[in-house]
Amino acid sequence: MNSQRKGIILAGGNGTRLSPLTRGVSKQILPVYDKPLIYYPLSTLMLGGIREILIITSPLDLDSFKRLLGDGKSLGIEIKYAIQKTPDGVAQSLLIAEKFLDNGPCALILGDNIFYGNELVNILREADKNINSATVFTYPVRDPENYGVVEFDNNGIPKNIIEKPDKFLSRFVITGLYYYDSSAVEMVKDIRPSKRGELEISSINQIYLEKNQLNIQKLGRGLAWLDTGTIDNLIEASLYIRSIEHRQGLKIGCPEEIAWRFNWIDNNQLENLAKPLLKSGYGKYLLQLLEEENLNDKFEISY
Image (cartoon, rainbow, N blue to C red):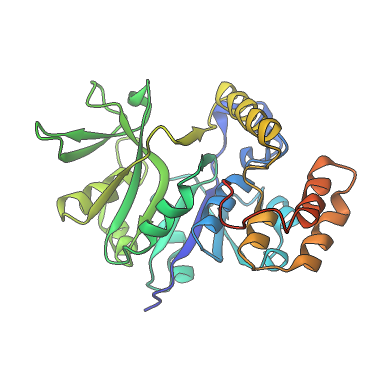
């Protein structure tokens, strides 16, 4: 059994809600302000200390991701790839990743989800400690009917997780980030496809809940969760990222910076990553990090 937690990014699907933008390119490669969308979930896993990552994508998009991210060595991590032939549900990704996980715990994140906030690193590191249970993250939204919703009893104790409920249950929905122990893969093998014909991740979360092995972490006002599944969501996310980056002069979802600040790569390696990007503000930002190295505390900057 492998006790080291590994990461999975589900970057498959057809992206039909973003069509025609996605007719020729994966939605996870579309830009969110100044970087590809997949940089953000990749950065989230890295912030959680995860250095072995599997990207699951469609046969048509595999080469694009390999050109963009390679094997991860330049970031001090290891990136592998797997194919999802047909989009048959989020939980299917655990089956696809079975060999990669090697009976160990994992963190699964959807490739179109963005997380940001000052306490994010601490929250992720705390979830990582729970290797014998599962942790999911909830967020209040105005349209919970479009998500997996947590239903609470009269005492405020979670009792059910319902995927896209027909009636209002609560405003708290499950975000696209899940921390599971080593039993998750076997659970997927025991569930049946939903009415939509998919292996629902809510079914897995419900099993953990019924076993009293589900930790539900509420993300409060100090944290942002952005789901970029629609055109409007994509634009709103870009404007949000732009606003913060312009105000603070810091980048959100920058895997090169995270690798450097966590000492997974050194100054020379960061400089080498910056050189091909010097005609863009992105490359200049990476060099600026080196110039300001003595001024910044490496572990007190939000990502």
